[in-house]
Length: 425
Ligand SMILES: Nc1nc2c(ncn2[C@@H]2O[C@H](COP(=O)(O)OP(=O)(O)OP(=O)(O)O)[C@@H](O)[C@H]2O)c(=O)[nH]1
Ligand SMILES: [Mg+2]
Image (cartoon, rainbow, N blue to C red; front, side, top):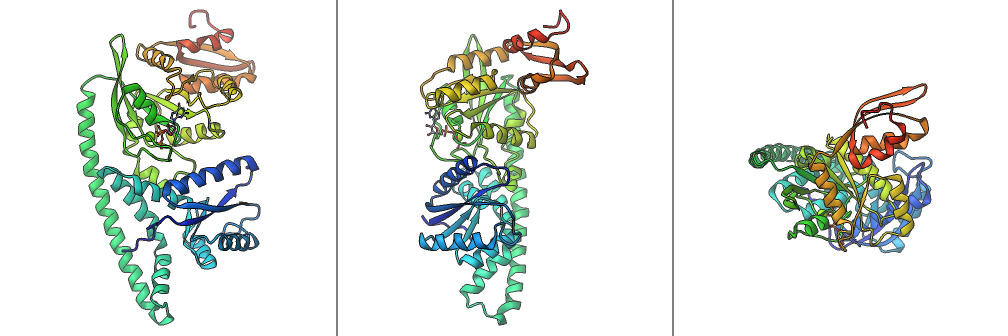
């Protein structure tokens, strides 16, 4: 069996990628994220370089001049591995390896490696194995090239190598089939567990958000649970559910979930679909975002995109965390862009009373119907209604945007000036 990903604390040379349409600030933030991913994986990020994609070369994704520069810099840094912040096709990855003489990891492989190291339960291990085998399958040729090189790789062994690839492919396909079977079994057990829980009518909320937003910290603070909190990416891979007593006889089940990240490998989204099912079945999604991270807005978008991909449609409660560490100006800007959000700190406890109040309001069904005619300039209110309420009707008319649905009581004031029928607000 080919295991290409056994990683010692390697010296990694990182290649950040500035995609078309991205500014240098974004590229820098993405590079910082890649550094954190590399360190979470257990390698050392010794040097880096950011390349702009302007005239993409399909063989390497970058131009050959840039590639040479990268390889030379990696040599100077005495790097053992090269990490490229992009998804490489099997042949691109092979080309980079040939050119550099180093193992080359793309973003997907780094994330897969972290998941593999962190998976604890049987289900998470099966899911990660599935994603890894699916990643390896189209890359078998490359793996053989390595073996071939190790064995002396003469042309004479070519036929043998082809046979070897075929054999390996069959082994991997058989494993994939077996894992899928095992996963079905585990998922059945989970469904039984869930049924047991559903017979107790306790509403559920799932804590979702970008990795490192503080989801586990919040669950820990709210329920005094023993939960792993780490300043690493993907500390949590398995959903943990705890009961949260809100007072006044109200309670809800809170589920901590795996964090999201931009460009999450598709194999992982698919593999984790069942774990994330907890999210799609929740009555409420508490979307937690790290207000102290300069990339907080793109993080919100990434999380929303993944939620849509897995079909999570429950109402959202947006919560900005780490306000103790966020600059005042950022907080003001976030609050004005997202007036529905609750601002908290899971560490200092600031805002947790407000959060509890919001949850109680949600449980008590404090929603109101609205029917408004918005000026075209108030698309922000359309977005707000979509994020926090249920939009039943939206029509672009000559006189403005006609919008109708339900919204949490506390947000009604934003729509008040535009109401069109007296009795609905
Ligand atoms: N300053 C500050 N740090 C926080 C706060 N909440 C969490 N953190 C820190 O942020 C880091 C990540 O916290 P976690 O709770 O593990 O984050 P998570 O969202 O569960 O992360 P994943 O499981 O990786 O998706 C830890 O170092 C926490 O101590 C907060 O309110 N303020
Ligand atoms: Mg966590």
